[in-house]
Length: 98
Image (cartoon, rainbow, N blue to C red; front, side, top):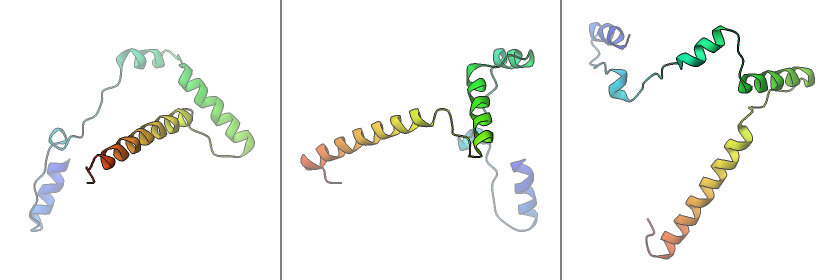
């Protein structure tokens, strides 16, 4: 796809080079075949059940659905940020101001 776009741009006089996804670091992760087979048979995992519950509750209340892992995500991020801040303070005290 990128090569076709690059070719059209070259025809119009725009210098460009198409890079492959692998070289840009953009890769597509393959779907887990076991999970795919289970979903084909109609199995719904706990995550999907929780998402459905959240969507049903959001529809009933008229609010936007809340991401089921948002609380854990925010907690982990705040823990990491506070630890980096502590490290930065210690480095600043020891003379590494940049």
